[in-house]
Amino acid sequence: MDGDKGIIKATRFSLREFVAAGRDRLKLDVVVDAGLDHPVTEPMMYRPGLALTGFFGNFAHKRIQVVGKAESAYLSSLGRTERVARLQALFEHGAYCIVFAAGLKVSDEIEALARQAGATILASPLLTRNLIHASTFVLETLSAPTAKLYATTVEVAGIGVLMRGAPGLGKSETALGLIKRGNALVADDLTCIRKDVANNMLFAYAGSTRNYMEIRGIGIIHVPSVFGVTAVREEKRLDLVISFKRMEEVNGELDRVGEGCLATDILGVRVPEIVIPVSAGRDLVNLVEIAAQQHKLRSAGYDPAAALDEQLKRRALA
Image (tube, rainbow, N blue to C red; front, side, top):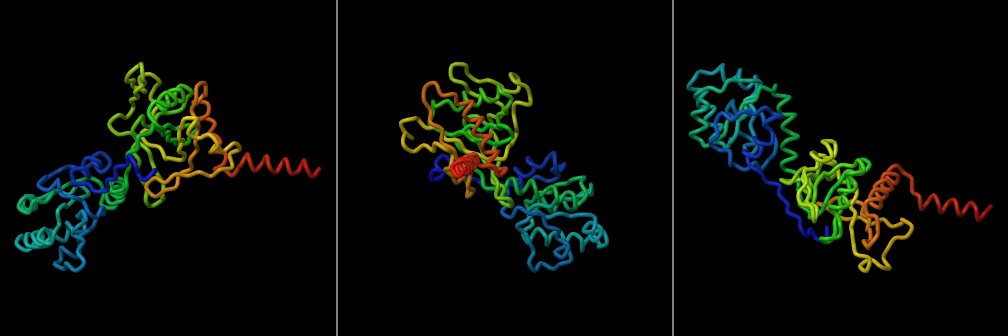
């Protein structure tokens, strides 16, 4: 967007961040925390079955290792000396984190080896397949390209609308008016954007100011306390960008009939854009609401400008 001005991208994260993000969903418990600051460079889970047998060809050491019941049963079949040697080899070949699934008990010897290697041991009661499946969503979210934009985002008529423009043009006040009409706040002033790479979609959410708004002359308000919990959204797919510009900045450039197809690029995704000129007396709340509903109609396949053009042609030929 505008040469990525105001955007901060971040795709790297540490084990500590993974544990924090997945603590509830994955029910993770930290058994050994020696390597929690290790970066996760390949955000995937890996079952080290062959590695435990001593074969390290193509061993995915950059991934988080998962030990399930099958791997645990194999290790239990070995004598203590052989078992320790196999586990030690795993750490020597770069394993930095092992998650024990299905409520498996982590032995004292594994804890000792992990501490010696500076590695992390995690445990989860989830079945191995469920843990790997749930971890995929957590890891994809953490590793997704992200951005921070100086903009306000609201859900309007089910549409995720990002409003941007110079300070003082009324973005927060417009959002407040939309919330009073039954719409919901996503983020005020600073919007975080996450890209769903698999589906080429963008999702907007708030950072540390979630649920709060700053209104000039009033101060900070807590939206759920004033309007109820339904007046906020934790995250919303971004469908439309509305750019507020002063009237003198857009004179002669306005799309009078809605045939234009403006779009803006955010993290490589093209998002439809509408430019709304701001001047004294213009009802921005009403205009944004109509713009969102218009976008919804177009997404459903109805183009008012094209429909009117067709109607006028039929009348001219009648």
